[in-house]
Length: 402
Image (cartoon, rainbow, N blue to C red; front, side):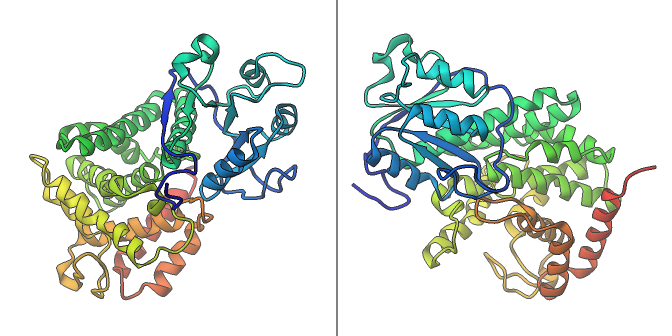
C-alpha cells in the first residue's frame, strides 16, 4: 500500500457516493486568527471539519487534506458543533461512529446547527446497507478510499455550494457562469472518453461572456467564481475574460472576440490530465513534477487537434502562451518574430492571471504589484508595448463610470 501524495490513503481504496441534495448558500472562507486550537490560521484555505472518534483515521484524513484545505479535527460531536457554529466550515466529514452525547441523529443535528454546510458521511460498510439513514447526506465515502477520491468529493461539494449562489445573479451573469462551467466540465468527460469537443458548443458557451465584456459589465462574472474550488476553471475563465477584454480594447469585435474568449477557456485543458497532487502542490515542483506540469501544453494541443473546424488562433493560444520573446519559454523555445501578436497577448494575460490568482499555497498578488513585476522583471520575456496597453486597459476597467 502506497503512502505518497499520488497513492492510497493508509486505509486503501474505496468508493464515493454523491447524493443529489441541493446545497443552499455559499461556503464561508476563514479569515483572520483561528478561534480555537483545532483551527490553524491558513486564511487562504477553505475550512474542512473532520469529526471522527478514531484517532488514527482522523489524523490520516487531516494529514491527507492539509496541503489543500484548512482542517479542523475533532473526536467529539458536541465539541465539534460548539466550535463549528462559531466558525462554520465549507464541508463536514462525519464518521458513522460519531454520535451526540445526548443521543439523536447526528446528521439532523448537524443540519440544524450548520445550515447549508454539506455533509460527507464516512462509512465502514456500503451505503446501500444503511437504507434511509443517509437520506440527508450529501455524499458518502466507504472505507477504504483513495486520497484523490476524498479530495474530489470535497471539491465537488464546495463547487456545488458556490454554483448554487449563481442562481441569485441577474440572468446574463448566471448564464455566462453556468454555460462556461458546464462546457469546461464536459471537456473533462470528453478527454476521458477520447472524444473531440465540438467547437461551436464552446463559442456558444462563451457568447454571454463576450456580451458582458463588450458592455463593460464583466466584474460580476469574475466575482462569481471567488471561492470556487476548481482552480483550472477559475483561471481559464479569468484568462477568457481578460483576453477578450484585451481584444475589445484594441478594436476587435464579434467572432474575433469570441475566438479570444474560447481560446482563453480552452488554453489549459491539458491540465485536466495532470495529477491533482502536481497541479495543486503547495511547494516547489521537483524536476520530474515540473516536466509533468509542462506537458499540459502538448496535451492541450494534441487534444485540440482532434476537433474539427477549430480556428488556428485557438490552437496558437494553447500552444504558445508559455513561450517568451527571449526564447526561454516552453515547450518549443520560440522567440521574437516567431511569436505573433495573439501569442504575445495570451502570454501577458496568462502570466497576469497566474500572479493574481488565489491558490491554496499563496495569496493573490495585487494587480498593481503583478504589473510592476511584469514590467521590471520580465522585460525580455513579454511584449512591453502590449503590456503597457494591458495596464491602461485594466486601469480604465477599474475606473468608475460617471
